Image (cartoon, rainbow, N blue to C red; front, side):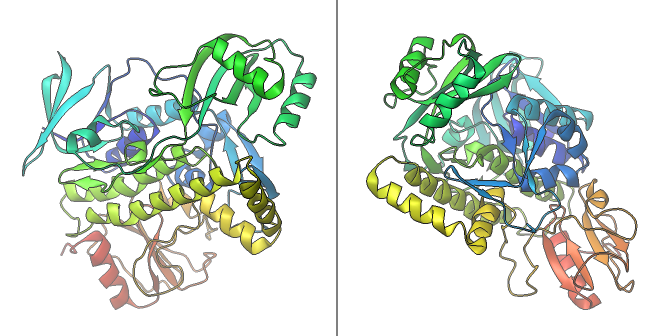
Length: 479
């Protein structure tokens, strides 16, 4: 029996696999596709995901493969400058195609020792008091059945795991659909850019732009919503819709891939069912506005990984695993809410356009712009840890220390006490919590206790208060 089976080898699954391996947990990743998906379904990473990569020592390899776009925020296609002094050391969007993100996260998980099996499709599951039995489509080197202590479904919006569990997925079906693909064009770049800019004055869901290697990425509204969005569009369908919106098809030809996506909005009723969890698109789907989908999945994995590892390694407090749902379900619901709002603002109908003009004006107020950008980039999240210091429940930005940076101390995925007083101790929890005494830390409080995901579990200067929160988040002390 392995410790954890992860169904789905996308960014959520690979991030989770790596987080578990940091704590020595045996991980088996089952991915039904034989080869990695080359479709560019996401174009970049937001601030909180960038911070997560930095916290695990991965950021440099991502920066080498991506492009930093500083100083710009977008809500419903409304472009405004980012508010000054955004609470992060990474005030930029990292432009990086999803296939590259997928590859880098898979490499990271493999380097840490995750067992990744491609061409393995989960078709059945059952669970009992001791574990979960997974049935595979075909008997291979793993056999017909595999057993683990826990299973996590990271297998997308049509999640087999979620369906087999019978977990409800309420919401709304797609009302709008877009066609997308990567292909070559014959229209000169200057002429193409001018036409696209004109179309986007009224249709924010339209775009044609360079995708590298001489190809262009195309996104255009579909004529209607199909019954089966898994069936890719034809090139002729893309050409027809381009002509309908732009008056030209730009001479598109030689598509590398074509697909369609809609604005369906749904969320799993619960993220945990016994020994099985849901994360990423298996737990929530929403309109792609604001580029939050992939980021939300990575952040789900970051929240769940250390908690599941704590349970497997025997030191988790009794309700720690349940906090995955109680913390992440509201976050997912908020993303569904703001993407719904953005969808309405992008409508060409007179009413939504009037609201859009008003929101455009409101975003000139720094407090409004800051609120929306903190929401889309996920740095405004504050988990409910109860009453206490204003930092409680928030993630802590990277700050300077007397020697180095805070995030450099978090690469191993353990808890961290950052102590400016030099008087506090994590004795009894040193096997799961690191301690850094640094009087020069750029911190506005005497000391903070950080969970492995970087959220502040305690702030203060008294040992008794610290011990209480160490027990709450990291279990009983070892004598």
